[in-house]
Structure formats: C-alpha cells, structure tokens
Amino acid sequence: MHMIQKEMVLNPHARGFHLVTDEILAFVPEIKAWTAGMLQVFIKHTSASLTINENADPTVRKDFESHFNEFVPEDAPYYQHTYEGSDDMPAHIKSSLLGSSVSIPISNGRPNLGTWQGIYLCEHRNYGGGRQLVVTAFGQ
Image (cartoon, rainbow, N blue to C red; front, side, top):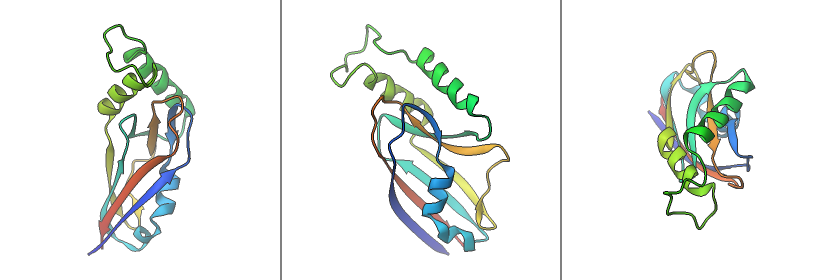
C-alpha cells in the first residue's frame, strides 16, 4: 500500500465554476502506477468549494453560477457577517452547501470518474486568490 499527501495552490480563478481535474491529476502522477486506490481532495478555504459534475459543456458551469447566485443572494437583509464585502457571507453558505472535499476511486492508474465528470473548483468570491488544496491518495 502506498500513500501520498501533498499541498498545492491553484492559480486564482474568477468567480464561478472551473474544471481543475487536469491540474490536480498533474500534481499526483504517482497514481498512474496504481491498480486500485482512493484520491481525496480537500480545499482549505471557507469561501470556495469543490464538487464533481459535467466536464464537457461549459454552459453547465455558467448555469451553476447563475443558479447559486439566485439561490444564495448577496446583500440579504438578515446577513450580519458583512464586513468583508457583499460576496463574503453568500460565499460561506455556498461553500457549506457544496462541500470542502471530493473523494474519487482510482482504477488502473486513473481516477474512476464517469464519462462526463470532472472536478470543479467553485470560486464564490469576486477576488478569491489562489486556493490551497490538500491532495491525499492511497493505493496499490
């Protein structure tokens, strides 16, 4: 059994939903030699999140952003946490709804994702900056 754990920083992304599968996989080339295992990716932030979804049609990512902005609006009159800007509290809520980690089985040296699945960085701030990830993988 092999195990690796690395920390990486994603380049800053604009607010929205972004495919980062290839960036993450390039960071852990060790898994290419494994026949079976598990890949877990954790984001160390409270205003961005990770999820797995459609990797082919970019309009899906645009629709995610539009829907979440309607679902969790900025400047709600009941928000008390407002000193970091109008996008901050909604970013915390969106992050909790989507989650801070994803886990993916590794099969034959690749993440065993569905045909149309990819890992999204969900950037909920207007200026979120580089996002830190902890990537943990174990396998044989």
